[in-house]
Image (cartoon, rainbow, N blue to C red; front, side):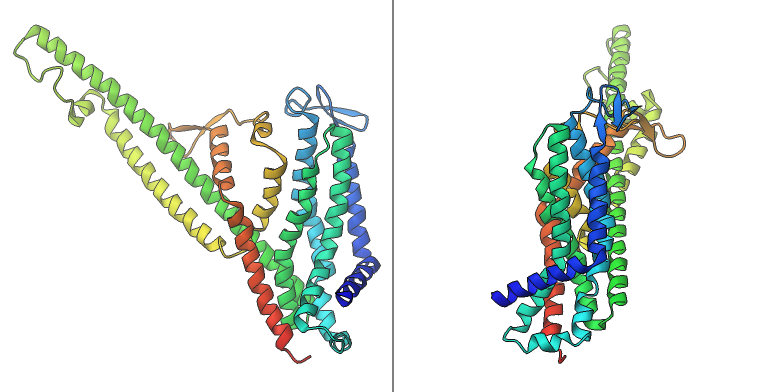
Length: 390
């Protein structure tokens, strides 16, 4: 245990000596200071001494605590820690294993009474130390800003530490494996960034297919309602015509109580066949986009969900009730799809339906399967580390 602690302390000293560690920490402080300078007024947003009228963001539409939570989640975590700080962290930690196995320092370490697997896991943990310290300091500063400026002391902010570290660990496991195999920092860095972009693109494509599926579902519902209403009105008119004919001729058939056939409805309203065909086409669209969505879920299941892991923090910080209090401009607008298409959908309804579908995916699927991928990668990397003759 003393040996492990000594290695962790040594790793901290190594991080402390790196300029990127302090540069990242400085930028994190500037990000926190930036949103600490932003305030909320009755008319909009106040930046230091400048008032900016914003109908969407003011004290009448959103509480200050929710406002700062949104900034922390979207700007601090969604932009800075999950992109800017992560890139700097990958650059700083990509050399840990390549330098360790190539510089000759590994021979000195292996001469000590410590197992290779323990050594490997300890070095891996020291790589995560960079992000842990950065996120912890950023979360502490944000906690103080939200408390002092927003009037709400939210310990949930510190969930950012395990969530962001878990997100980074997916990438760092790939970096570790490639670094061990190639003994090249550049190769480890490039492969990690390429895989990260691949995961991001896969997630973006999946979100597009979910949106297209939900859009088709909403259009199908609108068409079902339309066809039902048209058929009910047509059936009512058919019965009224039968009753009028019966009043003139008691022997007239069919009687008002006789079943109304689809042919009767189509004869009364020539629009019905076209609407039924449109409904059938839309059901085919629902089946098609559902198939593509299931396919991408299947592809994503064994892979890390980098973006979705970060989005878990929003679930923890901001409730649906808080989000429902304000919407982006245009949410109430309706739009149609395709030229001369008279099926109109509410923008808010489609967005909410898409968000609900994405958030319905369990935390086990988002984090558990991602951690499973990381465990497999680490198992392979650990096996190589233990078996290789350095």
